[in-house]
Image (cartoon, rainbow, N blue to C red; front, side, top):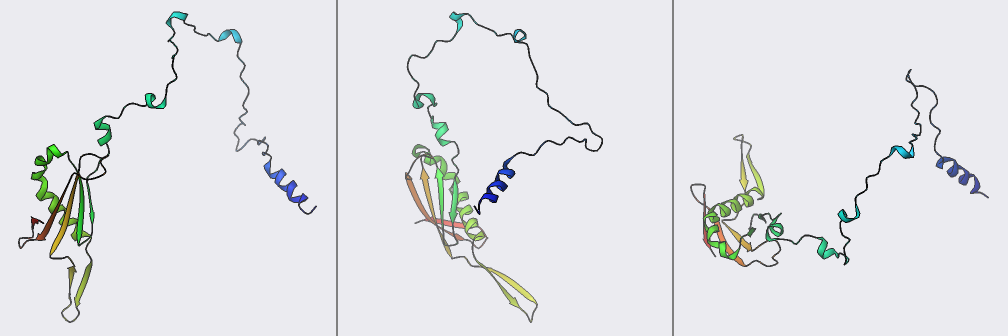
Length: 181
C-alpha cells in the first residue's frame, strides 16, 4: 500500500496538459480544424495495363542490388599520411608498382616533409640566462632521423608492395640531406 500514492503520481504525470484556452498578449488562439474532402474531387490517374513495368520474375538479392565497386571507387578516400615521433617517421603512400618511377621526383620533398613533421613533434626546452637577461629555445632532435616509406597499390591492399628506409638529417644550409639505408 505504500506505493499506491507513487502510482497515482506517475499516472497524473503521464497525461498530457490541456491546450491553453486564453489568448496570449492580444493574439487570437490558433485552433486546428479537420479538413473534409469530397471523394469525387480526387482524380486518380490510371495507366493502361500494357504500359506498366513488368514484374521481376526472380527475387533481387542484395549483391545484385548494390553497384559493383570499380577501381576508382575503391581508391576514393585514400589519403597519404605520415606519423611518427622525433626519432622515426612512417609515411603511407599509394602508388601502383608500375608507376613507382613517377614518384622518384617527389622523394626529396617527402623526406623534407618527414623532417619537418619530426621537428614539430620534438621536445622543446628553454635555457634561461638570468644574469644576461636572455633565453634560448632548444629543440631536441637526433642527428639523423629514420624515415620508412611504405608504398601500397591501393586503399584495399593489406601489405605494402615496396618498403624503403632512409636516413634524413639537417644540413648546414638549414636544408635536409638523405641517403637510403
